[in-house]
Image (cartoon, rainbow over all chains, first blue to last red):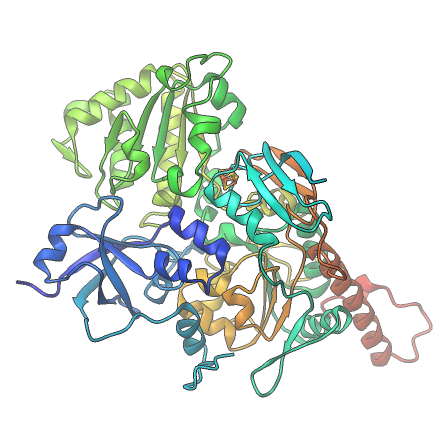
Length: 140
Length: 461
Ligand code: SF4
């Protein structure tokens, strides 16, 4: 069993994300819609990843913990998808090929099971990144 | 008595559906029901009056908390921040009206900053390809009435533009297509078996990032070099390429809709460039148009407004004072952020904190960050100043450009909460205050001048 393998990441819209975004980025719906990685079922089996369990996704520029699910829209082996939003953007490379558009799709990531880790909220991720996170949870 | 409003425009995606029916409570304050819109459109209307709104500007305090201030104080803070910044950047505009986009242009012209919109991180490469290679396009009305072959390339309208297929492209009964979808062939090119691919007649499951290769293969067929095509291109068997080529050539009126699958991946503008070239080749034997699936609400608007103002659709650099220039890669928001060139970031009508790569957010947040937005978005959460405004398309009427660049007049559905301002009013207020500050500063610098000082003579000095 291989527990780590390089996959190609894409990040796109989904209707779940669209509806949840209107409910608010701090809503439970947005968390449920966007803090998941969709994967090919055979890849998950090969990599020892259980459905609905946390995984650590690492790219060339960062990492994020998200929940692994089998692709709701089927993905070919070797490809994974995090819906556009706060979690995806923790690992999207900033390089733009001189066009202004970052590499939102088609960048390599490694995915490893991380049952001991917790998926963090959108606000925590952003506030911590920009130095506004406080341990008492009173992020402001 | 409840009020029933017909023919309302939906302020969510580039489809700009303007057939929505909204039921408003008798006091005109609450939206009760929404008909005809898709699930996302319905949610945006219902959410507008469903929760506690922030109705006054909030300024970050030294202890990290927000405290409420008046609109006048917020406008003064923003004007002073622009005056003191060397390179201010105003970015966003997806959820604003064209009237606000015009006001923003006027403000950044006085403030000598950079104007950019969300095209910069979505269809910017498409606009670059249009400059390079032209843009054979049409309106969505023509698609509905005439199109017999629909090609979705790297686009997933079921999820991103839920009514695109039912209102414009596949299912509607058009003037020359009276039998709707039975008279149309649908081809989807996507590496995933998306829900859009699920309704297609042909799904070409392309290898991610190899769009250029496949587009090139189609061109080779059209130029008569099919024997030189390898057995497999971009994960697609030659046989399928030849079969689909026949359909493309045989179309009476075909339309290619393309999305982020082309612009977010390797190749960017070059993918769109060759897609346009394929259309040109196809137009020698049939009739084809191409259209970008513009994502959010009025995201096509700033491109139009700034083109007629400056000649450039996005990444407009006004820091030189007397002329504008545009150079994606140099004057684009993400590149400016990655080089840490911006010392004031104004986020308007979008959520840069949630939708930029986090490295860009970190760089921008090193300096003053102002957010102008009706919602408590992530960009509002981390802002130094958050100015809430009325919701464009729901509380604020105005012009909106649909994805095919047809302008649509949006009407007001309900009133803004008492005492709130629209984004156009806020931007105009900041521009007026900035003008005063610049003239005051000029007077202090040359107190003996007997000539009246004009704004033009002191801007960007
Ligand atoms: S398709 Fe787009 S514009 Fe039309 S109702 Fe849905 S979200 Fe609104």
